[in-house]
Amino acid sequence: MSTESLSSTIASSKMSASEIRAGASLASIFALRMFGLFLILPIFAIHAKTLPDGDNTALVGMAMGVYGLTQACLQILFGIASDKYGRKPVIIAGLILFALGAVIAAMSNTVMGILIGRAVQGAGAISAAITALLADTTREEHRTKAMAMVGGSIGISFALSLVFAPVLYQSIGMSGIFIMTAIMAIAAIAVVMWITPDAPTLPSAKVPLLDVLKNPELMRLNLGVFVLHLSQVAMFVVVPSALVQTVHLPLDKHWEVYLPVVFGSFFVMLFAIMRGERSGKMKQVFIAAIALLMLVQLGFWSFLDHAWMLIAMLFAFFLAFNILEASQPSLVSRLAPPSAKGAALGVYNTLQALGLACGGFVGGWMKQHISASSVFIFTAVLSLIWLIIASRMPELPKRASKPNSANANDAASAA
Image (cartoon, rainbow, N blue to C red; front, side, top):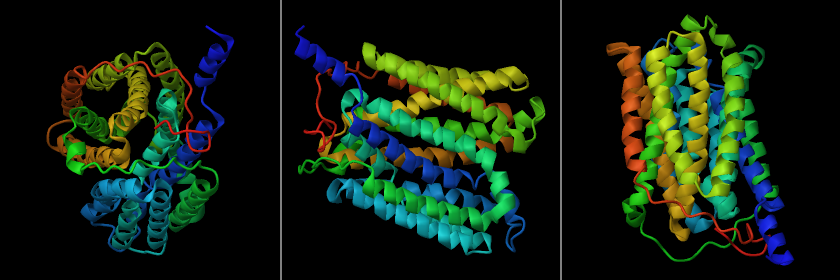
């Protein structure tokens, strides 16, 4: 190999400065947005009891879940719009809606008013546009690592929200938290405008949405994200009470478990993905993560009353979850037609939101009417079905090692 060729290979094995900037800035946008949302979850049910209509538990549940519902309804439209009008304008429009919804919720003194605010927040359904922009601005061989930055930022935001939510609620109240959420959205707009690299010019060819919906490989991934997030929410209907009863950890101390397992699993996930990318064995890593997810559900079923096993299962869950959360959107962006990445990721994120909604409903119903352990049997069976379907996916070719620019600022498009 010539010196020039060797230098090119080494250069292509590392993320460029522009790719790092794209990954870090878009991960921060996700983190700012999700941290504001996650802050509400541990404390809203308590706060609702202080409101005039807070004794209506169905309304309280709707206020917590309506965000996911409006997200599910609008993800595809926002994704298609990002294909047509550009990623950044759509992301900024969605963040404006998110901030507006937060202000509406902050000014409300009823659960219904907060419900309306959260519905407006959810109308800013920009997950597809963000992940499409990340795909546009990174090379294939580094895309999963960039997606891992986003997935890790979401997990860390969740863990930090458990630490700071009670403290912030005591100091600035629920209205203050919503205002802080709006400020975070405005900060995210500044990041999009002045830090995130611009995407290359999108292909002009039109791809019918039906072609995206019928693509069998995309269908596998859409099923997968539905199962993953249904399992996540259904699991957390049961796990918090198990931590109280088995580990004897009060609710306001759960972050002492979540924070280390999320951070620890994130670093192990990065190692697994980097090894898989370098060796061209990402399919094996992907399948192993689904198998681990299934084993975790069986582990919770068997060891829910064993303190250390419960914590070990949480670590294993977040490891599997982070690997799948990083690799799946990367695969969607790789398999989707270049001019329909936003639409494909819109469908993907719609199934993700539906999984979140169904997980809460199914987990709550099964825990109340059957048993807590039945939740894990159900999610284990779903994971097994996913594992069988995913195992039939074709081998993923090793990503090309020749350098090609990440975006328009680097030289040429590599989407």
